[in-house]
Amino acid sequence: MSTYVLVHGAWRGGWIWKRVRRELQAHGHEVFTPALTGVGERSHLLTPQVNLETHISDVTNLIRWEELTDVVLCGHSYGGCVVTGVADRIPEKISALVYVDAFVPEDGQSLHDTLPPEARNEQIEAAREVGNGWKTPPIPPDVFNVNARDRDWLDRQSTLHPLACFQQPVRLTGAINRIADITYMLATDWSPSPFPQFYDKAKAKGWKTLTVPSGHDVMLDRPEELTQELLAISSRSAR
Picture (cartoon, helix red, strand yellow):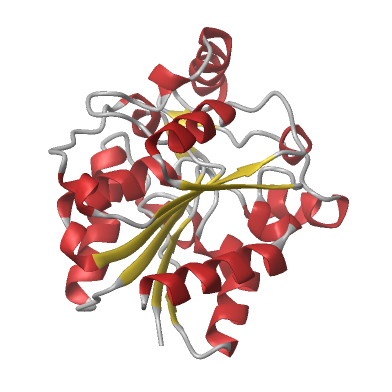
């Protein structure tokens, strides 16, 4: 049996992983899909103080208090920033690290540092218009080329996300480099995407890389393929 911790992206919640979670559990694995502070079922905890460090602590504390080891840690989109911080803090708990169409910040870099200026400014302006300057509204599902059957559901489920999460730099010690098994998965069926840059860097670093013909929310568009890849990663890391 393997242990998975699956971290959602901005505006989402642990609910977005339910299809993949069910499949992994059906194979006998232990699966955690935490909702980060201030979103999803924890949206009542949204405050201007919630930032990237809050979310790194959410996941780090889950792993510590559930006494998890040999974790396959997976982050989607903004969740890539979160799992990067987690993996750097507790690398001894992580057997494999997986990025699914995700941001991979370097030490001292924020998510906004990796975006084109126009995309960054759009989020800041949207927060001013509808989020009192500190909450960002969800990006519409059609921008991410989410499959048609899930778009209304995704709109209903998504919540405002704290702007500070995108603006706070991650602080890394280099301990993340102790994790040998790292995979980057790039979704290729939507554009413009900010993620090819991270896929190219992953290749250059010698990480395992793969592409999937999917919109950004791979766990909705291609849950079977994503599940199979996660199962393969756990089998590999168990050897």
